[in-house]
Length: 395
Image (cartoon, rainbow, N blue to C red; front, side, top):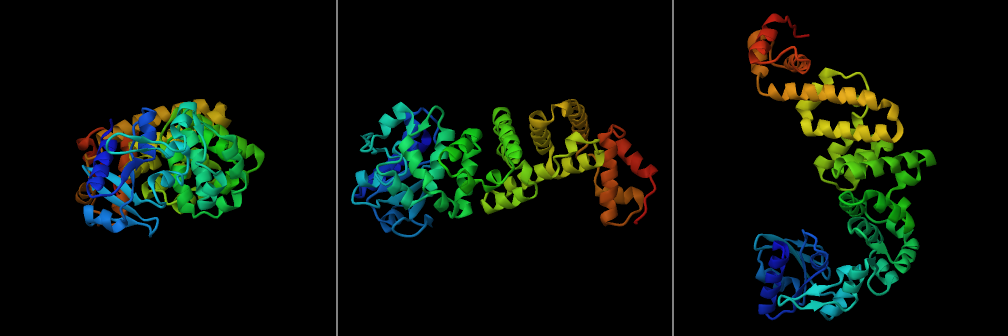
């Protein structure tokens, strides 16, 4: 049994020892039944927020009553603990989104499954708990979550009644704060992204989540879906997958990623992959390549070439040969740059060129890195000789 689940059961036991009812609920129990590794732990309890804080003083509280969640650290694991929103655990489970997430386990190992979640896990069915319209009225984001779970749980299909209910909530989904939608999209990047997109379309909410897709001309939308399918099969990297999804919207991709509240490094990486996507299919500019290696690193360059290969295979297979040539040449350059990464510095430039500190030093280093990438400078001695032999001005 996973460390996460064991820690959550221990925290549940601690609450029970204080006289409260408590159980681990949701994804951890679902993943246990599916033999999946779980990274989340949630507890539902009869204890109020104040009582939870007495057990774990100083823990942060997210949200407001009656829906507040206390985020505690127990046995080295982060656990979300929330008070019942109903009179008892069974009714509380009935207000959770999907039946497969409406199963609980007590600290003693008792399974509480009043809404048929285990049977739906066995059948591979994703359905809303109890009345789908009630669940969606409480939170329309559940329609997006339904598509997200379809993309993450292999072999599961969406219950027709739940799918039909989602169709009437398209306007409500469109009005959800972008950050909440972005969190679901971010999770979907980890699963079957093409299935996530097709599920959104099946539920009638594709335009509410990805308006840039439904606004595209049909041919561009077909091309985008083709890229996403290829990316899904070739890499699990979220930045590459996102870049393939948003390639046709160019500079807006970074803005959308920010509005979705994605982690800043990921948002910047997606934007930069799209900014330089022409590089691998053009005459290779060694100075730009060396600059990108220095600024973003070898792993980013590999992602750039992979994302462009996917684009190439999708629409321009005739350019594959050019991609291969540039990819091999870039690999050679990166090896050379990696070997010489710390072989010289701005201080060497100042000492050997007579330049003053300023932008000119950066330009000289760029030229030297270009020479390294071309194989003209192979070690520190050659770098120092190169600097000594050149004449530079402060212009």
